[in-house]
Amino acid sequence: MSLSVTDSHCHLADPRLRDETDATIERAHAAGVMRLISVGAIGSIETDRLTVSIAESNSSVFASIGVHPHDAKDCDAQRLDALRDLAASERVIAIGESGLDFHYMHSPREAQEAALRVHLELAAELKKPIVIHCRDAEERVFAIVGEVGMPPRGGVIHCFTGDADAACRFVEAGFYISFSGILTFSNSRSLQAAATVVPENRLMVETDSPYLAPEPYRGKRNEPSFVLRTLEVLARLRSVDVGDLAAKTEANVTRLFFNP
Image (tube, rainbow, N blue to C red; front, side, top):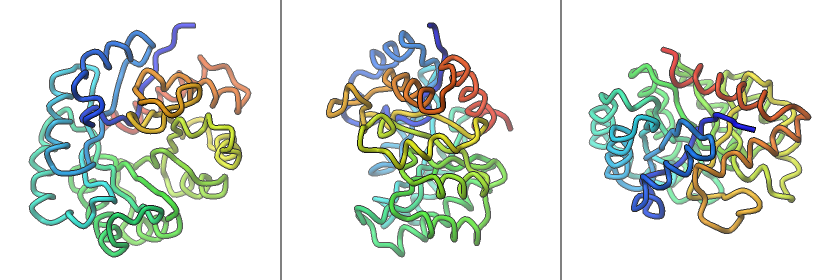
């Protein structure tokens, strides 16, 4: 079956992919992945600059820019000004990934929460959707979004790892839910249960490549072409036709990221 899908979250500027960007994109196209949303955010502002450059050089690639919660301690006024400048590119379609990661705690909790607040405000200011990273921090994400407000363009919880209750609460708050290769892991029963309760008009799929390769590629470098495997597992869990689900997720990506 010929499918056309979007990898709604990948990191083409990551050192493990950046040296073969063209080949990676070509493999994605050959697999039916016709749009790629490449996210900067990790590390310094140079990652965002390279991400935007890749998007400006490839018609099927779009960019999201921000400061990852791991690097929230570096989210100062100078960094935010640089993000505003980069966001002037028409290839920048979202802000993030921002959010909270209380699992690894590479930045202090206070810095992560402050960075999430300013990213929500920046997304609203720039009239772009927000991409949220949430790991072991659902309650605080709910609270901060409730205090600051959802950006008018909405947002997505990328690489969702919570349970069914958290998925439903995020949907009620107005978020889309994006599933990664973790969904294909045999020990992800709670996540698989969550994948069955998200309304079809709120579903997305992603690779988060080069991280989190799905089965049967687990442990290898991930890449956008592998997103079809996650889509197939999602369709099986929901007992729906994979082609129909591909069309639904495409409509959702278009609605969030490409409809002003």
